[in-house]
Image (cartoon, rainbow, N blue to C red; front, top):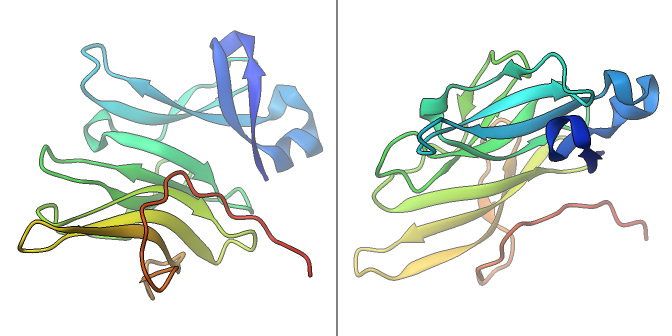
Length: 173
């Protein structure tokens, strides 16, 4: 489970992979944070221990990384990014060491964008916000789900609505 924890050594809240925090204690927990370039025009994803040590850059600043979240097993992160000036956003996955960066949505930057990815509790799916512009300028958007490998993408409600910052929790019946 991912949680936010106050981390004075880092000057704010960081997203923590809770399983490591529970297993090894705070000093070995790994958080994820975004950092802006000096000009503030680019952003990159970093992992960092909660004591402020061992900061490691995961993505390049040119990727313009945004919201990121750990997979339930802690082996992969999903993130939003806009690597080109015309990009409306895509959903990527990457390993914490920066390897295996994959664009899962591959949106046409002229007509589509994706943001705010979150993992299903079992790690098999990603839920995110998606929007598409039609040729007449109308926008259709809403919560979208796809397999963790980027296949089987579809809107969740039959009639898409603009929701933002989704969260996915298992509900017992």
